[in-house]
Amino acid sequence: QVQLVESGGGSVQTGGSMRLSCTRSTYTNSLECISWFRQAPGKEREGVASIYTAAGSTYYAASVKGRFTISQDNAKVTVYLQMNELKPEDTAMYYCAASARRGCGTMVADGGANRVLHWGNGTQVTVSS
Image (tube, rainbow, N blue to C red):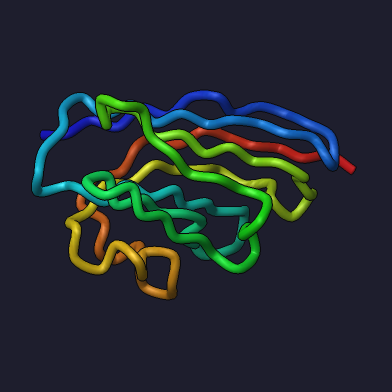
C-alpha cells in the first residue's frame, strides 16, 4: 500500500507563491504517474498537474499553465507543485494522487480523478484578495 503525504499548504495573498510537496512511502513501477488535484467547496475535484515520473513529462490544466510547475526530486520519491501568481480562485484543498502510467497526460482532463489509485489526505491552500 502506497502512502502519499502532502505538505506546504497555508494562506497567501493574491499574487504570492507557495510550494506543495508530496512524499510517497515507496516508489513502484506500477504507479508512475503522480498528479495534483484540487477541490474547492461545492465544486468537483479537478486535475491541476501531472508528472510521468519515469520520463519527467509534465501536463497542466489550462487554468494553471504558466503559473504552476510540477517537478520531482532525483529519487522520484517527492513531487513538488510550485504555485506562482496565485489567485483567490486557486483556493482549495489540494490532493496528491498516484495512478498508472497509461493516461498520465489526461489526468488533468475531466474524469481523471476516476483513474486515481491512491490519494493523499490533502493540504489546504487559501489565497486572499
